[in-house]
Length: 443
Ligand code: GLU
Image (cartoon, rainbow, N blue to C red; front, side):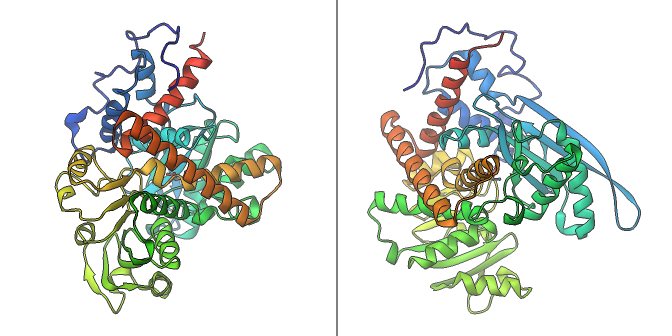
């Protein structure tokens, strides 16, 4: 597979980002550091590949990192200072692509990890992008609508040195949505003097967004779950599903699996959730949320914690919340047959080792949740050509690309005799390394 016999000179010394660089987290930092986890996954996958040390060191390191501090005028006329980041992990395969996260838990290391995972995700899906991620340390629920708009427009301006339809294309992630993307698109366009819809994806359809983008991550996850069941000879009509995280991803997975006759036995949000062995109708839970309720006080089911949900005896566990949910502390208690990683980084490398011994079929995050960025790519293509496709065409393309990527991960896993995660990472890393070698080292 791929190019390993390149003539590129090795750059093992003098690298700006050697493996022992002290300001980058090493494994000693522990399971809770997402970047340290991303690096541990990378190291494991790369050990199967015959890549030059300088190539490995380049791919191990973020290409560029922007940290910004900026003031926002609050409704009270007080000025508050917020911290934000935009990290480009790799620019080898094209412009960088990746979401923007608004959360109190955002750190530079988290953004670095998420950017690196975007590189592998895009490469795995054969999208012509490198990986990026952005984040602002803020709880968007604590801001008024206008404060959120001002914060977004200012952050967009701060990162506009990197952003552009041909250089770096943001999208929604945790805590952001299509409205936030609309403000970013408008801010960027105002600075340029004309509308540039292709600068972000996940926009409202009215301003150049794609049909099917909002549901794309969940739909893509469902495609991979069904592919996994086919492979394991499981019958979807009798299968039980537990969903951690009933947000944009988890709720769509629950709805689409429910529609094909699977039984959704439990759902949770960050504050806990509900379990009903007879099955829940996700539409009822969504109506309850729209009426101002929370997942955990949905009637007609027993309350459970997130920890309980992970340990349920079910066929499919969908981890669609956030990082580091399945760790060395609880991995041996996971009893599902399939783990579908709708979130980025829900399983730590330590937990992966435990899951290997329990035989669970893991659909790794960079495959499982790749539907979002895949339809983002379709949105970007539609914006660039100013010609838009109907939703069934988008969904058909998504289905084809997800199923193809699933198959390629299975083939790679069989070839290298490795776990699904290692297979997905091996395939992605090899593709980026190949591109790097073919392009050559400048100058
Ligand atoms: N934030 C999503 C992800 O983690 C989507 C990124 C995108 O569409 O660019 O994959």
